[in-house]
Amino acid sequence: VDVVSDYLSPGTITFNASGEMTISGSGDISGPASSLVVNGLTLNSKLTIDNPNTFAGGTVINDGWLVLSDGKAINNSSITMAGTGFSIVEFADNCPGIHLTADGTVIGADNSDILGPITGAGRTLKVQSSGGATDDRIFFRGDGTFDADIFLDINSEVRIEGGSSVMDGVISG
Image (cartoon, rainbow, N blue to C red; front, top):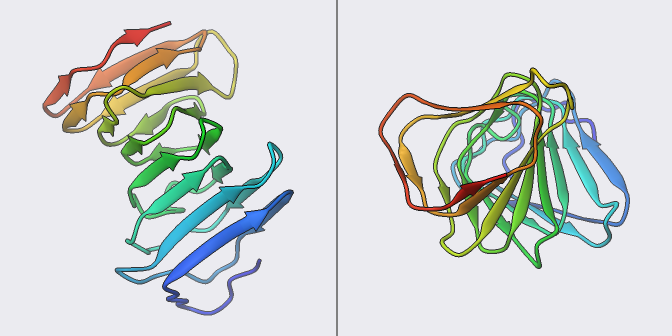
């Protein structure tokens, strides 16, 4: 989908596909209540967002795969990982805070940042590095409470930096 309008302000964009789709272009998905829902119909359901956007209504992933190629792809909008545990967020630069209502996975590029709290007591977030190199780094930055368990499945460095964070979950891996 090529967004060419300066501003597109829908109520909700819902991705229901069993294959792959990309949102790109020079336009901007905007709106204080505009939201994104990714419904993964199969393990190959993958939505890639290549352009910066300014919508603020949140993002929900129901067993799908969301790739954020641009650091502002979802404008630091909140992410909720729902469904049955097959939700994946892959990011190249920045990933906002994550709320888990089901277990999920994040895949970060080298020197990428998770910029907010990770919540969802009793749930587990698996953190992976997309590069696979031993010197890749993923940073948890900013204020917030981390009450979900975090499983680190990476051959690299993880840093928790900045702000005031409260760790209530278990970090393992």
